[in-house]
Image (cartoon, rainbow, N blue to C red; front, side, top):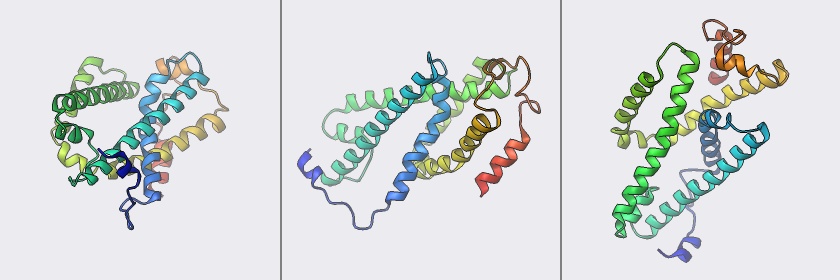
Length: 220
């Protein structure tokens, strides 16, 4: 592939994705992974290390992923192919089919394992009586069924990312207000994790006032 042609490629006069939409997609992607990241960086040795590692890791991963997607789309356009963001298509067309298959397998495996772990523990925080392996198995089956509909789901990927940003931003805004303003920057981590004192149990694990405020913010 001609790198020089890529660097001199002119942008479309009327792009489908504007700068504002691109910004929303990047921010939406960031917020969509925050909940999953928390399941892992909570094991960091200190809060500063967790914040720094999360920031650097996410910025680096975003730069590589989005940059790779832009390059793949541009190269597919220059080659006269149907525009795609999937690097495995270019690899397969160049005779690297097995490598492309391995890339797809490892990327899907790593992402789904992290997602499955995060979903399972998030559910267990709200419903403590559920057995881990049964819940994990059930979510895994649902994930497999969803993977069978990938052609349909990928058509709405950008809409989904924008929706995630739309729904997650009010939620994390409420969490920031709750932590820094209402609770003066202090949470009882042991009580949150093990419900030893019941301060965060509210109404059987649900804070209906917070849910109402979130729905109101999301609707607004």
